[in-house]
Image (cartoon, rainbow over all chains, first blue to last red; front, side, top):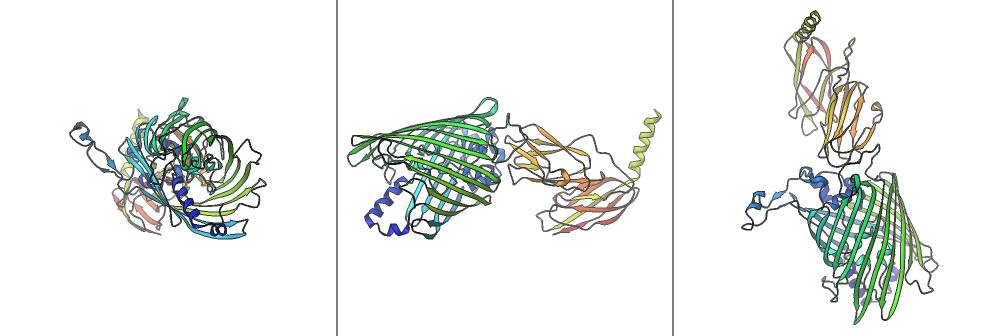
Length: 424
Length: 194
């Protein structure tokens, strides 16, 4: 957590450099449902969200169907009449006509405003950071095969970030995505309930030029999801190629491309591609999906700093366990970074527990461990983040969280944050 | 054979000495005058057995259909899931035992019997909070649900004096005394408001 007092002591060039780095790192990718979808289907946020932006099982299935209702039922679920850009019969006229499609009946935009009140333990100072952030989301589908999702994010007065991707949805098992890609979806980063970013997404390579939060930049990805036996759980995968380290204009920094892969297998619960087969249960709630999802991911890339190359790779595994009102998520990540002739090995992991006290009140705790260099004598950074998430409405959230560093070097830091999010 | 003649005679008699109650509802404070239930209050000395045939409430395109379902106490309702998404059916109302039927696949149904006349349980889905419906549990089978234009018709009401009541999920109307003659139509309009 930063301190305004500290910022004042940093000189202007460093601030400019930090801002540039921040812009590069703003390849945020949030594959969440948005209020535009609530309008389109005339349904509540909690149809897709555990507590926004964290998705529930149906929200994941909706995403896995290319932002559509599962089972081919999307057209009849849409309550907002789309605008035709060509009648269906024009498919028979092609190639002597443009292939027909349709667009949303109203502009598919959504807004999220975020404000914070921060207490910095080290400075014993409270600050109202309102507004903190303004986000414009857009997402939807063109006919039954093309979907898109993106975001423009304005944080403070000068920090601008944006993402966009469009994909061809052959079926839930095969999508071809083009645009902002990366490994972020292997972590809960884009869908986190806390103000604090996950440690595993903040871990940088040795040259400091890449981290999971940076995203893969522009690239392509094939991905898909399939239900498991009896319609329960199932398999997801993603294979991508991306610029990796990129500049402010999204150009690749070097000639090499980064590669990544991600696979998960879910046991029990709602099918990854949705549907209701085999889903009879005596209980139900939008936050319940008794299941275990096991996953693994790998990322390999080259980054450049000056004339020097940083060859790095990431290997990780994760678990997402849902049991009635309890959800436990854990991710372990190892990073290897080869830079200036030095090979550095890093280890980071986190474990978090979410517990629904009431559908509008979630108790949350996360433990984080980060050992930047496993071979040196510097102690690992550890912290614990307890929080309470309060859904005042389905689209109005506030949270109270405490970031408590546990390791000796970081002790005395951290602080308390109150945040509110309004989405509409 | 005699028994059959007797039953036919009884049926004829009950039709012959029955009239219809018709009317129009004006709703102040609602988009339209539909989904109001007009019904006869408890008829002293008479009991009615619930139909064996189940009533149905569908869950289709993230809506309960119908939105308002009046029925005779003791009627069983089959709640059908016609969507390929998981739905739930529950009621937070004590008079309906705060029942919760869980969740079930598309094309299947689960049932609940509404026993208590006078109960007006709201029906909800705990997966889709925008979904809402009402069951109006009544003590006799003489009721009707108004159309959007406010018109309603209760058919084949035995001749007699009754209290005619109206129920709406948001609006209220005053009960009226009504006399149904042995044949013909009685017109009774209502104004309902907040």
